[in-house]
Every structure is written in C-alpha cells, then in structure tokens.
Amino acid sequence: MPTRGEKAMAVLSRFGELAWFALPTEHNPVYGYRQVTYMGWRYRSPREGIGDFIEDAVREVPTRLDWTLDRSGRNWMLLPSRILEEAQGFSQPGFSDTIHSINLNEPDFCIAALLDFDHIIQHLEAISPPAT
Image 1: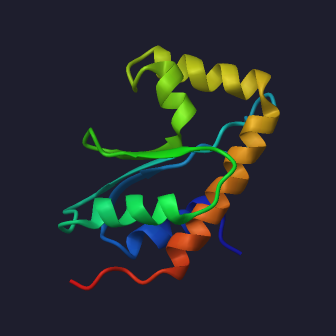
Image 2 (image 1 turned 90 degrees about the vertical axis):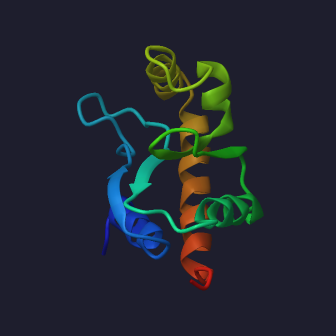
C-alpha cells in the first residue's frame, strides 16, 4: 500500500511531470505529536491552465477547513488557509512558527487538515486531467 506522500505524488503527476515534492509526516518523528498536513510541489513545465484546474478542483471538495493553493512562488503550496493568514505568507520565521504552534497546541486542527487532505487527494485522483 502506498504511503500518503507516494499517493499524493502519483496523483499530482497525472497533471504534469513533478520536479520537486514535499509532504510533512503525520506525526513528529522525535516527539510523536501530530503535525498539520500541507504539501508543496513544482512541475518541470506546468501546462497552461493546470494551476487553475487544480485550484478549482480543490474548491469543489467539501472540507472542514478552508484551503489555499498558493502559486505565487516557484513552488506551489496546498495548505489550510489559516496558516497563510496567521503567518502572513511563507517568510521565515512566521511560517514555521505558525506551523510549530499549531502542531503543539491544536491536535484537532491537525486531524481536520489530514482528513481534508485525504479527501482532496481522492478527488484529484477521481477527476480526469484536462485535455492537452
């Protein structure tokens, strides 16, 4: 059975060739606490309109949390919107501080993000990629 990361990579690869991918583990490997789920990736050469297609598909999924597909940088990030709002972007240390605080103090938020993430990946797996 593939890991969550392997499944997400396979699903995203349906929409283009991945150059980079990252997905934190569900639990902190040292201390064991839950971690909020989010992922980042980059396509080698994104097809025209694929970002909008994925963003629209994510919006179609009924989720517990609001999610954002941020394509403002070189890497695309799919994450709970609250993280970006509280961190005021991806700049350090705001982003990592926000993630760390949620990881330590809000296991219910981490569980909701994980469940949402799995539903988002299932939906992306079920839809057909746009014609080229």
